[in-house]
Length: 230
Image (cartoon, rainbow, N blue to C red; front, side):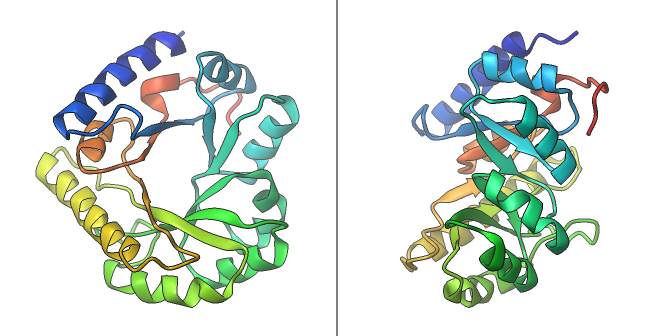
């Protein structure tokens, strides 16, 4: 069985090295432990290792863990959220990483009992298999969100292509960083857009070098446990 604590120490070492290379502070990037494919027991191990940000991608898995885990943690919903499932999710999470359409924004506005921190999902690589807005549509989309008082766009999220070409991955992350900075300079009241959610187990070091403030790490942290998949 993979040792979560040992994995975490290795990840932190790699993160700190990447932050140093980018002349960033050690506190500039936060790990989201992606627990979507592991059991409640393994998730508890993650919390006991000292991580407070957990990522789930299905309502059923999220709600099962919410029922079983009473720790004071931050829940991130990192998967595509179907409009019909907003009601069962939105008031149980702290961050949504997949806001990409007005119909979803409308349902959040209807169901949320407080303002929700959201990342706009961007399909930087323009792959048909990925969700998210095209780069050129992000600014107008954020403009449309101004009328929704329950939504605060704290940043942008993307996923890099599944490739071994580091230059392709780096360019995806770099382009999103440039867009994030452009939006942040506008100082939109409901869209401070100061954060970047990008980088996973295979590319989080590159993401950090290019400005990620949240990295979503699953396999490298919790292993490939298949028990208790939600």
